[in-house]
Length: 428
Image (cartoon, helix red, strand yellow):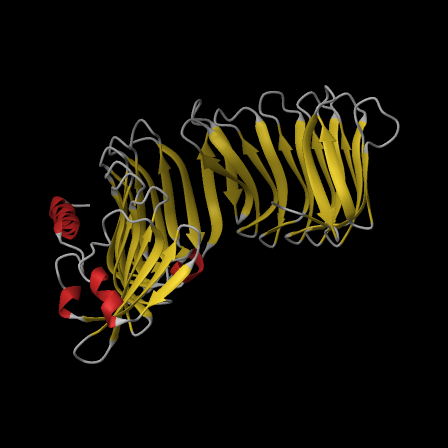
């Protein structure tokens, strides 16, 4: 990114950071407050519409700490539009979120703060549900440049939107202020050259996109020098056709892809941390993940048409012994699931059908004794028996989905009690 472009981005960020939020400087005082809804810390909601009762709220600075969970203020403007302002608060009372709305739709400034009071997000919203909760926020339409900051106030990203779609170059930053990534978009999809830099400012990766798909040459450079090419890939409309990957330590050929077939290598900071089998330009077959040093396998699974299929293993990185086994069928968990203790003894064994518990679940103590047996049907617990170490008879039982599950440590002390009713745990 050139200096002029970087300066303009910095200037825009500074102006937005310095500009007062609508409503704090008296903008809302020019409007007629028609109602206010307050949700307290206990979740109790109160709506106030009486003109007399509303008077005491007209001068309140709702960006200052408040003893509420969320507040919505409702106004009428001169055109008769319904204008509202929502504020939400952290548990310590500090302002958490601020959203402007028009005619019951999110429209205007959105601000979010860290719990320490530092700004987190500055954005402009032009559509979506007028509320502050994750399901509403996921559907908002953004416009112009959205700025994101860490809890120390350092700029993390400047993401550019146009009428709800990513448009132009979005920029991400290292904590030292240097550019980390430049990502150009057009009408919401990647278009152009994506660049990735090290924290010291050296070019690390170049990736080319055309209409949202990888296309053309991609290059991965060495962390130490832009002159040393560690890997290159050639794509055509999203399919990987040719590639060569070098070992970061020896600079010898580590893996290759020819005519869409072979092994892709993915780099971490110091080593190859993942390999993927490719067939006809698409990931197909075994995926192997390594620890940060690239020496110890920590996970393996298989891909079939982009979804996990077959056995997936997780391993203890210190010993290489299995930790977890999952069985997949076209992206859905089906079959036996096993876990092991670090020493290698079996910890549990159960069966899943369509991502739900079904059949027998057995849990073992590290010494090999049975801790519990449970029988499930469609994720509901039907029967269960729970044993103290060394006992032949169960300490507690669950029958027809009702009872209490009691779990013990290897030393024989109770670790937890879980009451069940109708096959479901009763949570406090």
